[in-house]
Length: 219
Length: 219
DNA sequence: TGCAACAATAGGGAAAACCCTATTGCACCA
DNA sequence: TGGTGCAATAGGGTTTTCCCTATTGTTGCA
Image (cartoon, rainbow over all chains, first blue to last red):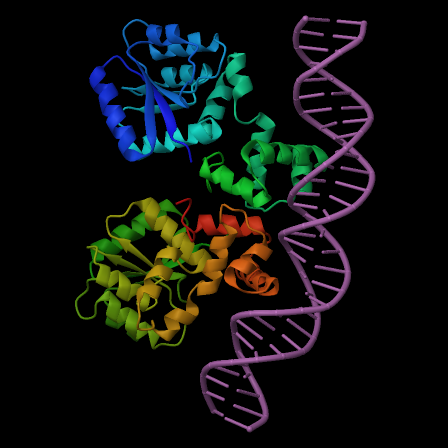
């Protein structure tokens, strides 16, 4: 297991230090990059060996977090960003996901929340997948193509996963009926997910789904 | 869906009334029996049409909740009891499960907790199964035979269920190896659980396990 | 407008899961 | 000490899952 590398973009030195301490304490994370504003960060791209993800503060002088995300979309290369904010603001969350953020956390989350989010982003590219998918879909105007094309699951894959986790315990045949597709199409969804996430079986799909909270457990 | 019927055993009229209000408000529960102490309750047995479960207060004048549970064990007929206490006391919880309680709640739990517990007991006979199993097993002295024979899952069934939910996505063959049994034995565990809980598939076992929190989700 | 890229589909075969029925061996008990 | 009950095992057959390879149709774009 390699160490997860993290970059921090925050205008307060004390916040950067605090985060660094915390991150190195709670798990095997290494901070390999620090910037105290968005412009400096963007100017430094492309990085030779970028960290696995960036923790980006929303409120900063000059560019705010969302503006940084927007600028990132125009840039070659994949930089995964977890956005941190002081306040809950639906607009900001929407905009963040819309512009490719891989996760979103409020600054008074627990250390556990932070670790969970980081690990999810490293492992599957996103935290809080179902939330992201929901918000992307609420937008009528199509989300930035980049954000959309990178997104973890297509609409139909999500629908398929939900059927796999359905308490009626459906066979692939029944799922095909329910989605108006042939079994072969269903099987190709399955195969795609198997390969993408290192899954081996139907049970694995269920475990994956619950682990990353893709399908809400038992409504 | 039939209404769930509930009996209340508590020495305070106001608590009984409060519970009654709450229960009838949060779901389709009907209170069909009320007793203000353990002795009265025991004297009334056997009941012609017993409720689906009893909510039993621990602290009562005369017999306390545990004494009531002990007395119940000597009695013909199945009366499912959810114990309520004012304080958390490991000793009491141990004793309660030891003597056949189907669930345990602290009096300042949420309405949601209460509903969840009641529904679980009605559906599969127990709330918080993994907790119960753990506590039963911590006892060296064998738990009362009655409590043990009624218990939801045997040791091996529990082990089996955990293997089914193992993130390695084991086949039944591999589970057999891991448990030192033949596949056929594994299959008979599977069949037993299928029949007992109306499950149809391996995926169903996983869903069941998570729904009732039998295997802890992702340690 | 021809060529990627991708979603949907298909055939066919191997492995696993599912289901029914039946036997063995052991513990308990009247 | 023969019977009852239960855990473990077995054979054998059906369905579903899993896997590989390949074709069709549609979209987009250079």
